[in-house]
Each structure stands twice: as C-alpha cells, then as structure tokens.
Amino acid sequence: MDERYGSSIYWLETSARAAAPPVAGNHTFDVVVVGAGFTGLWTAYHLLEADPSLRVALVERDVVGYGASGRNGGFAMTLLDMSLAHLRRNHGDDAAKAAHDAVATSVEEIGATVAARDIDCEWRHGGLMVVATNPGQQRRVDADLAAAEALDLAGFTRLSAEETQAEVHSPTYLGALREEHCGVLHPAKLAHGLARVVEGMGATIFEGTDVTSIDDADGRIRVTTPGGGVLADQVVLATNAFAAHTPWFRTKVVPLYTYVGLTEPLTDAQWDEVGWASHCGIEDKRNFVHYYRRTVDGRILWGGSDGVIRYGSRIEPRYDSDEKVRSRLRRTFEWTFPQLAHVPFSHHWGGPVGITVTFVPLFGTLLDGRLHYGLGYNGHGVAPSHTGAKILRDRVLGQDTALTRLCFVDTKEPTFPPEPLRWVSAELTRRSLLRQDTRMDDGAQEGDMDPLLLRLMKKFG
Image 1 (spheres, one colour):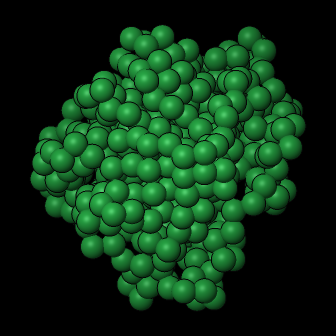
Image 2: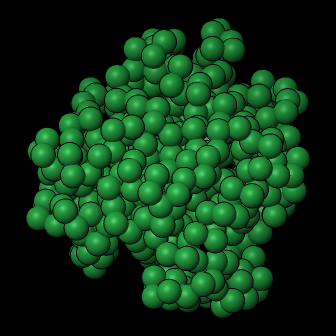
C-alpha cells in the first residue's frame, strides 16, 4: 500500500504515472489550474483544444488523481441533484432538460475522446440500470421515469422485475429504469491518460505542490507555494471537496466520505450465476445508494451504503477506510448476490466527495472575473466534471454560451451552518436518511425524503 493513502486503492495500484516535479522558483502562465483531478484536467484539455497557444499549468498538492478522481466508482452518468425528479422539481422543466442534456452529451464525448486520444481507461458504454429493491424505491424509479417522459428525454426505458433479473441475476430486484447515457471506466487510468494528453498539448503539470495563498497581484493573480510563485492572468480552482478548506467555500462545500469494497475476480461459473453481460452500471434508490459495476478483470465494485462527515470537515488518510462501513457493504453485497456470499473482498477504500446544500455543483467566478471555480459534484462527478470543464473554458475565454447559463452556474449558493452546528446537523441528517432506508427495506411505502431531513434542509439551507 502506498504510504500516501490510508487504504489499499485498487485503481491507483493498477495505474502508473511518473510524477511531475513540484513548483520551484517563479513562473508565469496565462492560466493556472489548481487541482489535477477530472475538473482540472478536462479544463486544461478544453482550453488547449480551443486555443493551443495558451500557456496552461496545473498545480496539484499530491499527485494526479489523488482525490475523488482516482477513487470513485468509475460511473460516467448524468445524475444531477438527488434524482432526475428532484432536478425537475427544483429547477423547472427547461433548466432541468438543458442540464441533463449537457451532461448526457459529456458522456458521449468522454467515450469519443478516450478513443480518439488513445486513453486506455477500460471504457464500457453499457448504460445505467437504476433498480428498486422495495416498494418505496419503486416509487422513486417511477418518479424518475415520469420526469424523463415529461422532459422528453431520450434513452430511458422501464424494466419489469423479470427483465431486470434477466439482465443481472439478483432476487432483490422489483424493477428498474434503464438509461442509455452511462459508461463505466477505470478512473485513475482516465486521469493519468488525460495528464499525458494535456502535457502533449503543451500544458505544464506540477505535483507535490501545496498552494498556500491565491492573491491579487496588480491585475493578475499570484498563486503562492512553498517552492515559489506562479503568476497568471486567470486561475481555475478545481479542488472539489478540498475547497472546503478555502475561505471562499468553507461553508458551501462539506467533504463526505464514501466507501467501496472490491471483490476478488469471479470465476466463469460465478459470472454465469450473475449474468451482467452488458457491463451496465447499477444503482439502487436508497438515500445512501448502493452503486456497483463490473471491472474488466472480472471483479465487482460495491459502493455506498453510508456516508460519513468528519467534524471540522477534516480530510486525512486515516479516514480512507472505515470498518463499520466495510462490514455494512459486505452484508448488503451478500444480500443482493447470495450466490456470491463466499467471494471475498480484496480491497476496501474511501475518500471525500464534495457535498453542497442544493445537491448540485457550484460554478462561478471571483476576484473581478479572474478566479473561476467548479466543484461540489455530490458523488457523481465523472461526467459532470467534463461538462463543468467546458463551462470553465468558456469563462476563461470570456464567452457567454448555453453552458455558462446552466442552472448550477452563478447561482445563489446557500451555506452550511458553522461548527459545531454543521457536524450536528450533518449527523442528524445522516441518521434520518439511514432510518428512512431501513424503514423502506422493512416494507414502508414512502418514497420521498424523511420529514426530519426536509426540516433540517429548510433550517440550514
């Protein structure tokens, strides 16, 4: 296990990249991107594709893909807000359709780009199957299908219990919603491949470089690091959950730790018992969803079940694993696939995702139009970060486009309460969500959010 991480992270173990040097001395660029995860890498890619003459640098505190971009489940999916039904309810038909279509386009563009740029990230475009395992979840599936039909979205299909179980052999499925726009991939290989591509396009990457301040410098911006300074006309902040440690976003983004388990490779006989020939991604409709997918080497990644917010928004390697969550993941995996009860987990890891009050990302501009930001994907950032990077490109280039007018750009950003109320409200919300999940598993018919959660969101949002 790499000593930089608090657990054994399969994606980062199975993707290698030679480290770039840290910042040393003083440098000048047109654009500096702080953070070398998906948002930062795609921003550099889109900028250099639009204007190859730009001098672009990425400054990363750790290594490329260190954060959520190297640890996530590898789902490139369209989800914004808590669900498609919530997106429509909260933003209206026109805005919801525009946002969904923009991310659906990104799913297709990611697949096209990795093929054109020869990025071997194990891309499989198998769609998404959102399953219901109890009547309350079925109501949520039905609500999403109704929203898709009302918005006239293409690529959504209802599946019966028999059709769902024929796709993937779990006795727990009562039905599902199939969405075409979803692919699964190896996230660390995508991050490392994008780094190679943007370097080939002319970008400079600095790793192992902590940014100690971002300040106005007579009409430009100075990014200060322990080893030197980087001066730029414009800066893009692309640090997602880690933005919670900046003065601008301390009360707007909260790091929530989410966890996965990964099985040993299944035998051919075991795969015969499971099916899953399409390589579709799967989520259920719990509040703390279970999300799971196949890997190309025959494993099952099993994630979700719970989420943990640490007091003070702490992000530390010691939180990269959680034995209580690992045990819960194991139990729910065996419940979903009883035929695989004896298949062990070989890996367990986690990491922080950026949670916002509204459950949609935050994009905007600070410092008189010279500092642009995109963050807070609420655990579903693989495809939205591609969309967001195009928004950031347009902002840097001073262009007013349909993307810069999406419903999560330049919005009034509600805040979380200060500590200790932040942690107390987050923990009460977490328990409320888990309690509702348990009630629904026990047969309760409710399909919307717990009343306590709604009160908390109204009070603190």
